[in-house]
Length: 218
Ligand code: G16
Ligand code: MG
Image 1 (cartoon, rainbow, N blue to C red):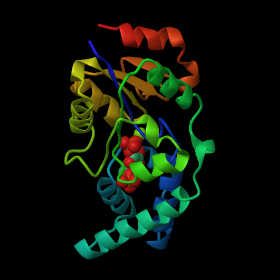
Image 2 (tube, rainbow, N blue to C red; image 1 turned 60 degrees about the vertical axis):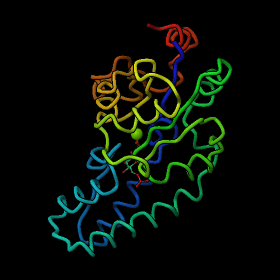
Image 3 (cartoon, rainbow, N blue to C red; image 1 turned 180 degrees about the vertical axis):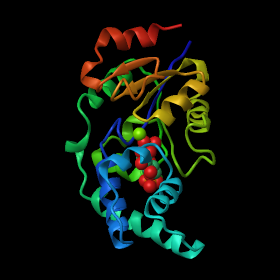
């Protein structure tokens, strides 16, 4: 069967979590409380709106609808300032090697991200042309761990869900991939991503034997 590969963005292709953190902590300090790097873990793979809700919870702040929206926009404007400075040097190790391997084998590739800034980030780092389709926070209604983002990506690639492989760094993303009946590959801490079918610290640990196995699989 024809295979399809789906990449998460933040934490898999680039480490934008650090920029999300800077923007959220800027907002928190403006609102008069501290947002820690440990708390930022909860925000990985989670939609902007949900992050805003959690942040206000942490600060014990009740916001009007207006304030909520204003602060969310403010955070994003701040975040985009960091994103604007990104270039190819921020691509995580061996991501390009894996993308090139898939291209060489004519495997369709999708992005499956919760971010609404996915396309400009891929452009910034020069990877946009690798992707046959981008499914991101602008195209889905249900956030991870709902499988919608990955199911839509499979559909747009013209590949059956069972024949898709997902690379993810967030617990919610692994759960979404498993629900979609896809091969789930955790990129990051294997203790945190224990529900993944396979675990790798990063792409440098993923050799051609493993990748060939995925192409031959099932
Ligand atoms: C990413 C990040 C999340 C972020 C979300 C929305 O998800 O991991 O921390 O809140 O996107 O991003 P934005 O504010 O740019 O729309 P993923 O799925 O790419 O890891
Ligand atoms: Mg991620």
